[in-house]
Length: 381
Image (cartoon, rainbow, N blue to C red; front, side, top):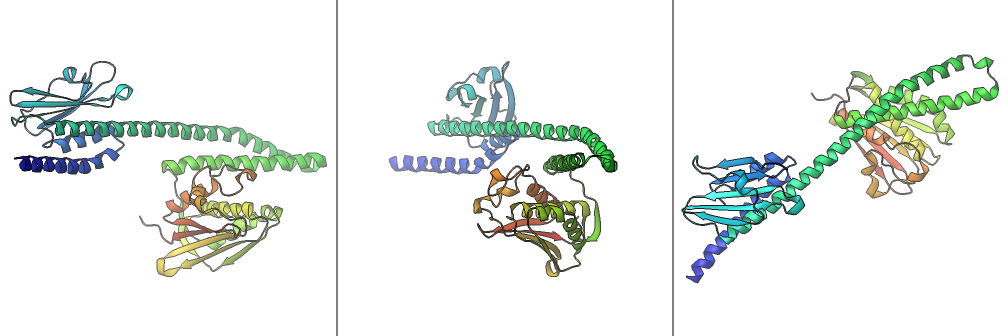
């Protein structure tokens, strides 16, 4: 008799363990009510013929879930069950009802209940299983709420950044107009005024770039970056950008060398690839310690790819930073000595991925870094 009891108990433990392992996949959901429904339906037949979840939220308790295997299976009203503070089993003839709280004290969400009609009362093992289920459900609900709270906070921040960037554009346009007017009358200005005008123009261009970066941050994160596709040679873009950046490169004592195996013709967004090349070169010049910067480009016909690589000979990037540098507001080594928002590489990755490509970095400390961009010659639709 004892052997039979042990065998039965062992089967129950195995069955309950398998059930928990199976139902746990639902707890990763970040949507509370679909998660609760999936768990409730999975529990039918294991803990009862009917399952309900009653929600405690200020006023009268609310039933947010009731599922059953048979039409006549029922559970008491939410007002009778929602006050359950600890696990309990109640018998009513052939009917057995089991209820456990979901969460405790301040984290109390509500009550999970089951009823069955097979004439066998719920066991202590059933109660323990239901309590474990309630605890896991409570943790999943708390995680989902924290995620929603963080997402809302991030959403508010993104909206604030976007609004601020848009609002800054209007006064900046006025500043630019005034500067251009003064520049046209530069011959009538004193040398010191001309110098101050140059400083103000440089500051205006820098602020304009920061505003564009902030707007692109919102576009990339919201998936609303539009592409204007056309066929062109990537090498032409590289030459144009390199020419415009000659002065910036010279200021650091660096030189820009091009090794272009062109033409590299693809169907991309020219303005956005101009931005990719500009950001990668600016990054290389900034962190290149005044040493030569090399940009190379070519095609990989077998993979139908175009590629470009930008190499500097600076300090390099620590291994644990090689992924985080592509995140917004992050930078590589010697952060305290660099200005900017740390959005350049994030924008590069966002544009490249929108074009169906990929970007990666290869670097060793003390040996500089190479950023490699690969782009399909035609974007798949």
